[in-house]
Length: 306
Figure 1 (cartoon, rainbow, N blue to C red):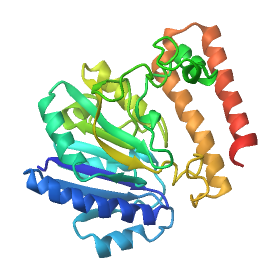
Figure 2 (tube, helix red, strand yellow; figure 1 turned 135 degrees about the horizontal axis):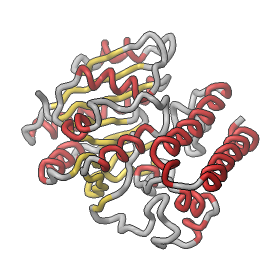
Figure 3 (cartoon, rainbow, N blue to C red; figure 1 turned 120 degrees about the vertical axis):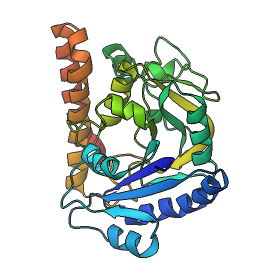
Figure 4 (tube, helix red, strand yellow; figure 1 turned 60 degrees about the vertical axis):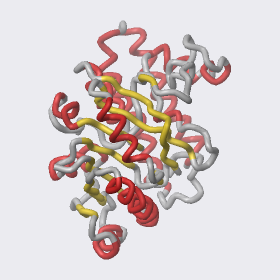
């Protein structure tokens, strides 16, 4: 058994996988100095391959490359690596993320000291702005939290507990605290917590909302989910999907792929609502939520990306 199993799921982002692995090599030195061991898996979901597996096999012998025959989606790809892994901790790490040298050993020390924490994330910083990527610091998307966010009230009334529930903007970002959910950009999970929810990530989803689902189910089992800002990771965001404004111009995603990702984003988020929140609200509220999701898809497809 190793201390940490790192899982990087790639979709046509070979050059970013290389940057990611180069940074991890520096982290490996810090991990070794701290007495920690690791293993790294690169799961290549690029249909037909983009050269990632060949590059990893040639240049990073310490990394375990895995190539499914087709794009099997985010949770299934991660589960494939989980089934091969031995780490006390499992780290989901996006390929377009650059980990600082001290981040991994410090996160292991932190999780070792907090036996009640099932999932934690570090400070995820957007490369485009230097600000915290708030998708890594989430409240659950209840109807109220979603309404206040999409109406702009969260941004308008900064640090309001009443209006800032979608991204928990009222919390002190300089100190450790509990959150509802982090993102799969950097999600460090205790193996026991994953075992408590069946030992794998939900394969009901394809690309999005699986991270929120995992955090929701882990919290239901009594574990805490936390934000630990003493160390950080740099995130370029959206390289594979092509639907994020921060990296739309440098992503290699085609218009067809962007359209698929927009639809997957909203269908996966609707699925999360159906699984965990729908039963808590009356039919009228649920109808309005579904209408809002439908409208968001149409707006995204017409105005923003295609």
